[in-house]
Length: 181
Image 1 (cartoon, rainbow, N blue to C red):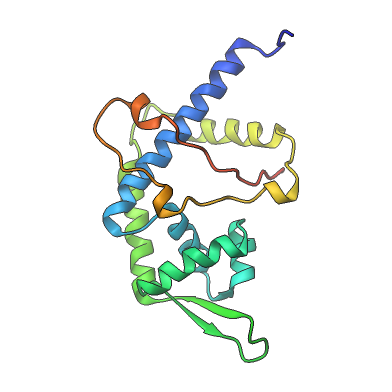
Image 2 (image 1 turned 120 degrees about the horizontal axis):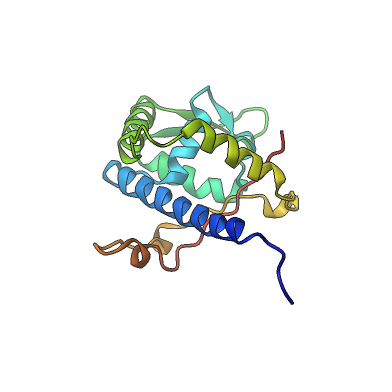
């Protein structure tokens, strides 16, 4: 069976995958000294506009509530958030960013900015527009597979010095929800 896929497209897909893994790795490295993960930062960002219950937050950041619960438990333990049981529905928790969490979120934003290349030759707007077209052209996954699965701490592997290929070997990209429009 032969493929009609343009060789440039195939090479671009591979380059895009490599770039995504490298960006994720840089994010992980930038956040590690702060004791944060990408999952934690995404949860903190979801709370930056105000408190939500766990299900609302899970929907806002496109993850399963159960997966988010583990992230929130760690964030609560480090004082980044508070969870308060609701009086009307005792099964629900109001999740709120603390001052410590807000400061950590600001520090994470700065750490991530420093982790990204500041090369003026990169056409970021064009890249964003082209990636938006690519994401929009991909078929929508079924709703159950549109959930980001955050790796548990024991699933994360420490990185050592070496070439990028060695660092990226075996790293799985999470599934993300694709939006049209």
